[in-house]
Length: 227
Image 1 (cartoon, one colour):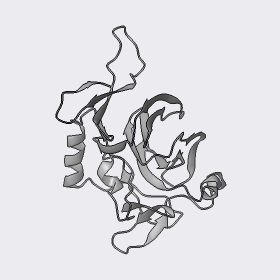
Image 2 (image 1 turned 90 degrees about the horizontal axis):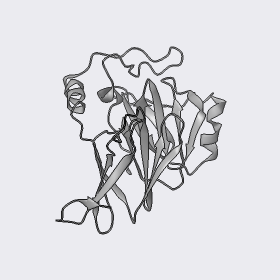
Image 3 (image 1 turned 180 degrees about the vertical axis):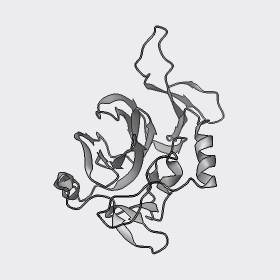
């Protein structure tokens, strides 16, 4: 099964029959706000602790594997209009052309803003489960990014609920192994420089709180310097 981000929203595609079904449960009235934002475009989806964070150009929210709203007290309304996203748990980064907003995924709180000019996301080693494309083509399989015990999309009918995961493919196993060595950085570019966003090192004193992302920039063909 694949997930597709298209003009009408996130959809699940059966590769054998090419049948499609909307990811969001149409009878869940708590999702009516999505319909009211007719110009909101789906961009990325992330699997976090058995739930899915759906990122649109206007907002982000959680759904469960049945497409029903979860964590109903968490809805993120972006300050800008993001063209790309990156996840560095427990933070999600939204890339607007003029700034990056970094939010905590648990409550949507804004924790940091990094300003720039004509910013474009180039690379994020921690990829979303689904990445939108301007052509709305078929995208990466969700199952490739799941652990062996994670659910996979089963039959399209509701009920029953989606079934259990199938054994991981060799490609999925290789991907899980590769993710153990993921680089802790996100690359973006502006009009005159390339920047790397990384998680700041923890303070010298002991602390249980995760550090915030920091960023560095480099002029082309130059060493990395503080931004």
